[in-house]
Length: 280
Image (cartoon, rainbow, N blue to C red; front, side, top):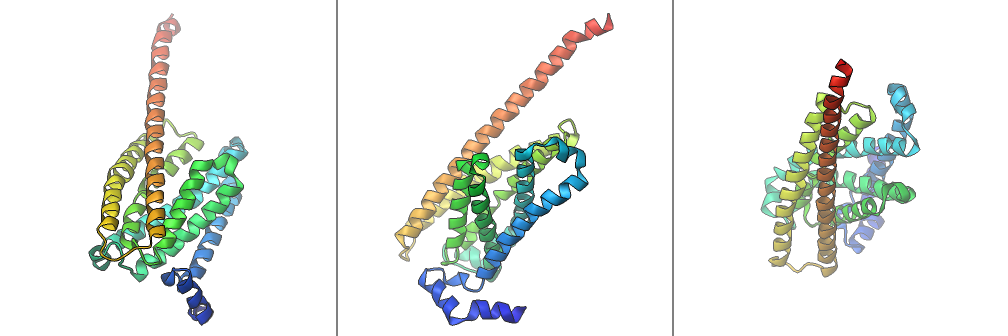
């Protein structure tokens, strides 16, 4: 198996192709990108097969769109858990920390090949289901795919891991939605996870993300090495798009939390008003 892999990645045609398109560091990893995309499609399809067995009553209650979203979340949470774990290792890499713009490392590239494959799968799946997923998720998938693909130029491999810490909130968001589908909104786990979701989204995406964005823009502006303007242009566009989506989604989370709190207060008030009647 390793011999076949070596033939695929080390032949002159493969190396020459990736050098030509400006992604020289991708040559040893491109089979992992397509294998990763296939694995996430497999996770999605396993969700369709296994969930009715594990949670039959929940699956029967969900409509077609809700079942689709359930299976998408399985792939999403698998990617998030994998990348958050690996990103902690990459962030701790002193070689990358000392050269955050141009440093590169095999551990980072191995992890990013998986995430490029995930976002490739995400683009294809979102395109096929655009009426369900929406343009916002398509923009997120395309921009994320492009940013992590460009890390193989190499560029921003250190910051790629930092931004991947956004996925901490993705884990809590998926758990939150799974619990809702399971009808566990009254469970203490739902409340605790909800607090973790709001906190992680605010601190990881809004606070940390804004600081990272400033550092990246400043680093690009102060770079002593000329950078292809097409690359910097795409990176800046992707950053504005992804941060804009994060600000918007956070506002949706806050408005939803407020609405749920008001609904809970209304229910309690109605129960209190109805209490004396029940006593009579």
